[in-house]
Image 1 (tube, rainbow, N blue to C red):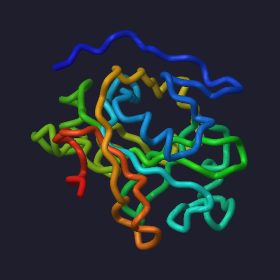
Image 2 (image 1 turned 60 degrees about the horizontal axis):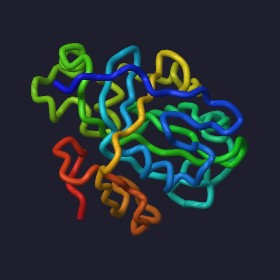
Image 3 (image 1 turned 120 degrees about the vertical axis):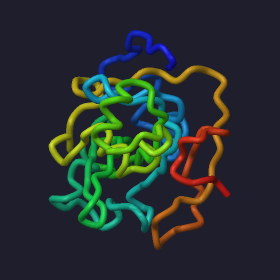
Amino acid sequence: MESLKPALLSGAGPDACLAGIDFMAPAELVARQLIGVTVLVDGIGGRIVETEAYDREDPASHAYSGPTPRNLAMFGPPAHAYVYRSYGIHWCLNFVCMEEGHGAGVLIRAIEPLAGLDVMRARRDAEDVRLLCSGPGKLCQALEVTREFNGMSLAAPPFELRAAPPGLEVIAGPRIGISKAMDVPWRFGLAGSRFVSRPFR
């Protein structure tokens, strides 16, 4: 297993810069830059290998119709978590971006497990490492992310973000699991990763 180096992390101040990512940037840029970043929750996690971007002017976004009690965190400060339940079953983890009040975020769709594999296997009741975090609901179960994490800063425990190594190849394609704006190429992935939720087309 890859050795995890000490955290490379700066506080989310006015510029919301964290692990080399400017969370004030548009969602599609943040989503691309997050590929390769390591995310840990209480020390459990791995490398982000798949993301999707959503913006308030995007009809597929939760922010499209404006703030509600459910999506309020998506309009909150950048570099914070927005957690929602999908189809009443699975929790989904998003990273908020753009200025406060805008309404944009990045869905973390899949990670490559690197730290705490035995814990993740127990939580997921699965042995194959490729099945632990290859989807937004799976990774939230593996990391024990629930609604309690909604609105939390990504710059403070239980979250820890570590900068991506240089030179990674990022690929893009249409988002999946949505019924609107399906042709928008705002799904990003680590080229060649076997840990994505499904192959890119």
